[in-house]
Length: 258
Image (cartoon, rainbow, N blue to C red; front, side, top):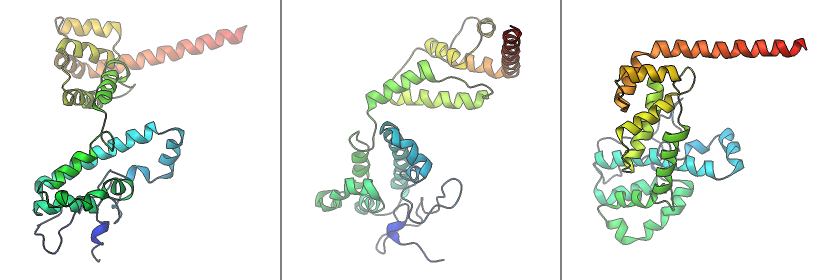
């Protein structure tokens, strides 16, 4: 099979006069199958290629903006990994990254190719990512993102019915990492309180937890208690759901009897 054209590769490749053992993105495959030959850096644009996604974006631009930011985060990570591992000479790294952009991202940044100082800079790859990460392009408004993350941790992040503790704690830790990135430090006891709310424990479970932890509410002890009592929590949740269903059936029968 012939090599795809250099401009269509998902990441920068070595030119004839550039020495590089291997392109760290060349063999990347998108989930679910082989990546198309003309795919841009993984995750940066592929989210917008299916009809279902485009239909969901018709109701406004907020979802589109969020998806663009999430896609850029993935692209930025892969680009930084490539910059850290490539043997391409420094002055060529930024132009190679730029050349492999497509559509709107390329149109937004192609002016850099006319900037001789950028083209000759030994840090043009990092400078390109810095420009892309501004809130005017694809980066986040840090203050808004911080507030959104705080709102998720405080109000909206909740353990779903039948969700295992590992899956839930992974979602929880993701939001805590985002808070740490914004240098938001909350007291451990308060984080433990928020974690209890997010777990949606019953009053009886909270009493058991407090007795087990001797009143401590740090996330560490809350997680430990949840893991130890995972089976009991799942069983009580099942019983509660069945009880509510039975009460609803009885109430419906009473209404029918009138």
